[in-house]
Amino acid sequence: MHDSRETFEPKAFVTGFPIKHSRSPLIHGYWLKTLGLPGSYCAHEVAPDDFAAFVDSLKNGESGFVGGNATIPHKEMAFRLADDPDELSEELGASNTLWMDNGRLKATNTDGRGFTANLDERHSGWDGAEKAVVLGAGGASRAIIQALRDRGVKEIHLVNRTVERAKELADRFGPKIHAHSMAALPEVMSGAGLFVNTTSLGMDGEGAPWIDFSPLLSDAVVTDIVYVPLMTPFLVQAQQQGFAVVDGLGMLLHQAVPGFEKWFGHRPAVDEKLRAILIEDM
Ligand code: ATR
Image (cartoon, rainbow, N blue to C red):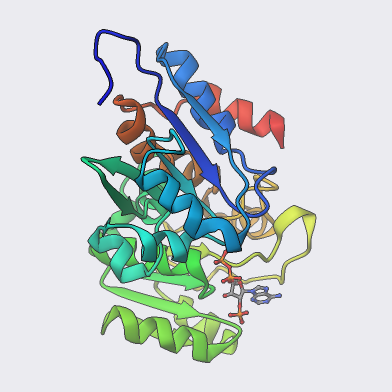
C-alpha cells in the first residue's frame, strides 16, 4: 500500500517483441502531460520466453508497474496468465490491457471498443448498418466482429483469403456471422452499410487489389484498421467511388483510453492535437 500523502507516481508499460515501433508511449505520454498527472508509461521489451516471469513480477509487485498494455506476440499469453480476464478477453482468447487490483491481475481487450469508438466519433450513425462486410480473419478481425455483433449489427460477412480461417471464426461467434472466400466479395457487399479492412493489405505503401465498392449501400462507410498510410489504398479507392471513409488511426487512440483510465485514474480525451502528433510521427 502506498501512502496517499506522498505523491504516488503510477508506472505503466507496453510490452511486445519487438516493441520499439510502438506509438503507445507517445499517446499515454501526451495524456499524462496534458492532464498534468504524475506517472509514466514506457515501452518494455520482453521476449516470449521471459513473458511468464514478467507477469509474475507484475503480480508480486517487484516490477513496480500498476499495469500496462500487451501487444504482439503477448496478447494470448497475457490472457492466459491473468488472474481475472473479463468476458471480452475470454471470448477472444487474448488481452491487450492489464492492471493490478487488490493483488489480482485483471485483463481486458479494448481493440473492439477502440474500433467502434472511432466509428462513433468520425461517422456517427454507422451503427444503423444492418449488414457489414469484414475483410480478414486474424486477431484484429476477431475483436472487430465481436464489437460489431455486440453493437447489434444483424448480419456480418467475413471474407478471407483462407476461407477455413473465416469459417473457424464464424463458428466461434455464432449464427450472425457468415464466412466466405475472396471470390464472393462482390456478392456479399451487396446492400452492406459498413466495409472494414482488417488485413495488412495496403500497409506501408504496399499495393492492394482494386475493389468495386458500388454494391454497398450509397450511404455506406468504408474503414481500414491500417493507419500507415492514413489514407490506405482501400480508403482512397472508396472515396474516389463516392463513399464515406474513416481511417484507422482513431482505433489505435481509442483502444488506449480504458487502460489509461485504470492506471492513472482519469479518462483522457482523443483530440485532434493528439491525432496530429501521431500523424507527424509517421
Ligand atoms: P492480425 O492479428 O493483425 O489481424 P494476422 O493474424 O496475421 O494479423 O491476419 C492477417 C489477415 O490478413 C488474415 O486474414 C490474412 O489472410 P489469411 O488468413 O488468408 O492469411 C490477411 N492477409 C494478409 N495478407 C494478405 C494478402 N496478400 N491477401 C489477402 N489477405 C491477406
